[in-house]
Image (tube, rainbow, N blue to C red; front, side, top):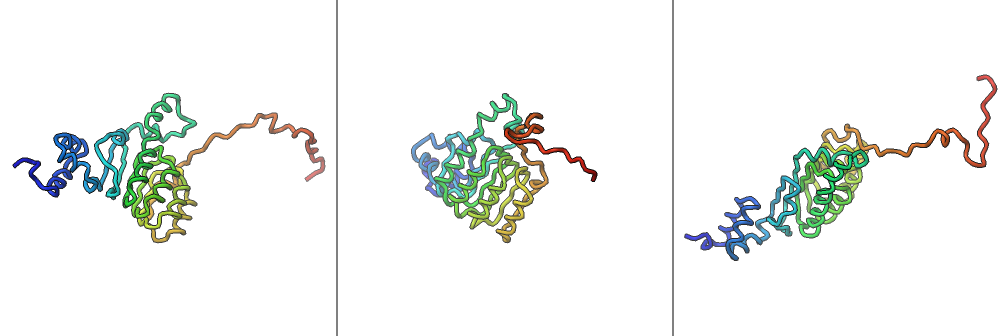
Length: 236
């Protein structure tokens, strides 16, 4: 029996056991299998283990997508997590190759996958609060959002969860150093039934942008047109 003699249900079942690359390769053999590859029901789950996978043409985004995970465990994650103002020119060049990939991909998800129920992002050091807020607005059925080691996530994401995560039941924000204890307390007060995990987040040292340092003359000299206050002469 030839594979093309199988009915659509069997072919979809067969494709479901294959990884993304294998599905794509099989779809190139004939138009019938190409149609199976394009079937939205085949793509209810998507898992990515590197950012380069997001640029491939071996998957499809559709309203059928229910679960999405992007888990990047690479030495480059450590580079992405360094504060921008502390990165060397070489480190900035590394990040420039992929810093917009996750945000751009999630914007596509916002436009095409309104029925998304679960999202996991790990090691996505460049994903932003604005992008996550849009995801919450665009996917009103989102029930689980798990963030791990996402350096740019701040209390603004917590506020977006409180404001827009109406269906959200589980929220993890683990090892995200720019989330504060105060922000977590506000979220807990706003969403008392939310299953919340924030492992080590509030205990980590947050980003500390460099402040402009004033010169000694500007600190100790009086402002133009003003006299400096006289030193007290009386006894204390």
